[in-house]
Length: 216
Image (tube, rainbow, N blue to C red; front, side, top):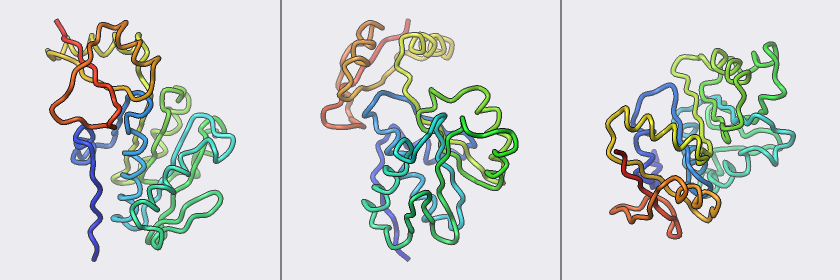
């Protein structure tokens, strides 16, 4: 039996270790969150046979707007092409598992029932997910041990202020985040009072900028 070894940035380790129904990561473009969940999904489908998974976005008119290409690249990079079968509209996983791709805008309370029995739902670009879509999705993905994952961009100043308020309530001393090749996000951090710093253990890309703000 082969062992799959995937290097994972330390910032994402809690998502691997925590036994939780909801797992989420947010950050700017290039922060690695989609790549992490893509690898995590492939790893899960390979290790836990017969996994049924759906990759979701609020609006998905074509598969070009989905996470399919990212997942295909992860399967190839991990050397698992012989265990997965890639089709135009789906990916078959070991043990009769499957990965499909859906847009929530197209679903109704009746059509969403087709996802009953799925164990993993990954919502990418979750900042665009509507309250209606979430209310349909949560009670549908309810198989034993099911999980809902979410990754989104949340660098707007309003959301930064909300996070700072929570940080003060929790007694945190500072907030740390990062940007990669994203001038607009970097400017938001500067406007929000964040300053550049160099962490002891960088978790993203060589050209990533790291930001920190002290909480008083």
